[in-house]
Length: 258
Image 1 (spheres, rainbow, N blue to C red):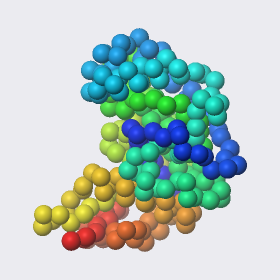
Image 2: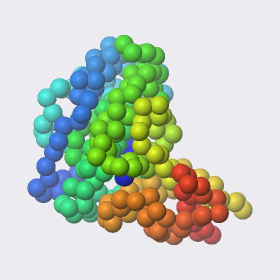
Image 3: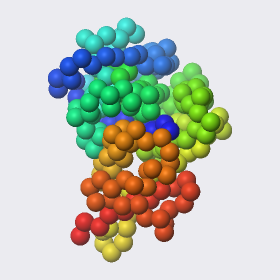
Image 4: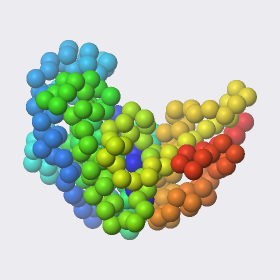
């Protein structure tokens, strides 16, 4: 199985990295460089308008695009798993994984990205902001879905080429999973849904759902999960599998914290 996560808007390039950590390079660096060249043509005002962000954030990201270099080193980048710092990654808690768990994750986890397409945990990543849903005009179309086309799906196919029955476990948001061209994807896709009881019914609460996706990734990494049926044993932080509202390719986990 291959697990997919969304990236995070919040980044951390200050916290000391675990000792002895190795690194790899992103698989789509030439495509990332093309996007950077497109982004460098935008003014801070245009970036702010395009992404719906403040002037301060727009200025920060214009500076990031200007500083971005095609040569990736530990001095100008850090491993993606330790650079993202949002709700998903708080649930995953990468800094508490041991070396063997990180090595397993390197082979079984991909983080989708507007700028980088897809990143393995140890792929170096220079700081950026570019959400997958951004309508950035480019040489291949009017948005990033057209830019990435079938590239991400083909990468997943390559990663799972030796598996007799490949399965992709989608722990990413719909905004990001749309970048995986299902027409070209050979794997079965399994969706994990996390619901909390609130206001008299179970519903998806964004903050909790993001955190739970990280918890599920952590659960898979710690236990080296290889089969879909193993996922239903997930029970972190009060969640439990709800078979009555689940289906073959949509596993629902619920909790009642009232």
